[in-house]
Image (cartoon, rainbow, N blue to C red; front, side, top):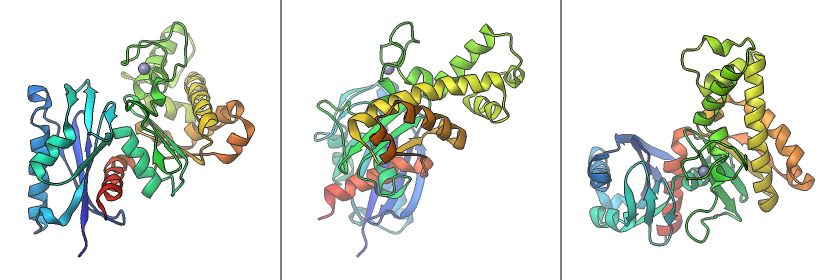
Amino acid sequence: MEKWLAGVDLGGTTIKMAFINIYGEMIDKWEIDTNHTDHGKHIVTDIAKAIDQRLEKHGQGREMLLGIGMGAPGPIKGDTGVVYETVNIGWKNYPLKNLLEAETSLPVVVDNDANMAAIGEMWKGAGNGAKNLVCVTLGTGVGGGVIANGQIVRGTNGAGGEIGHITSIPDGGAACNCGKTGCLETIASATGIVRIAKEKLTNSEADSILRQAEHVTAKDVFDAAKANDRLALEIVDFVTFHLGLALAHVANALNPEKIVIGGGVSKAGDILVQHTGHYFRRFAFPRVAEGASIVTATLGNDAGVIGGAWLAKQAFLL
Ligand SMILES: [Zn+2]
């Protein structure tokens, strides 16, 4: 009998959930709101209820599921499934795996959300089965996931692949959420791009389409650059210089086959890939540059739940 896997991707505003079969095909997907009350105490119960209700809709019971693969923000201890800290939800040393197992009576595997997105892209997305892959997610922040020899690199205390916190501006950079300054996240995230655009618009007299927008977004910047707006092109050049440089550093250590750029900012498409690729090739070791192709993610918001299903499959399919 066919069995399903449950993928769960916990975000700051919504929890994305899906039933996926062992071949990575989507059976059903849905989302629920992230309940922030009582420091996120009700989230695990909400997930268990949502899974039960959805199974019922399909006329199935829990025995239909092989297990659950769940991603959460922040560093996670992979084997125990303890979330060290998620600032925006309020968990600290939170035994997520044990609590979700107790609530659902199903086996659970937990990982960092950016790692799960990287695994999803490796399995069913732009990674196209590449065993050496770097995934960078440009959203509100900058997430990273590194896969070497088909295995996600979690590191000694769960902070492997934190590409967003590579220092780009050693002195005088903007403050980052991690406590440092000048991280890649302060430049290449949607938030960073908007900050840089505002600074440029204030410090320059140059004409720009961007002056017409009441609240400039990262999308506005890329759209203006596509229309050859000089100021917007300067911003894109600055952002992709730092992104290409950081990715070249990471790639020199890993020699990946694919570098997948995901997150909302990646919707800018060709212009982002081309400019980033230009700087990447300038800064990467020539043989590393030859071996790597830079592509945009193809799974969008589904990458996390698909990666979760893959992790559950690896852990629980006998
Ligand atoms: Zn940082």
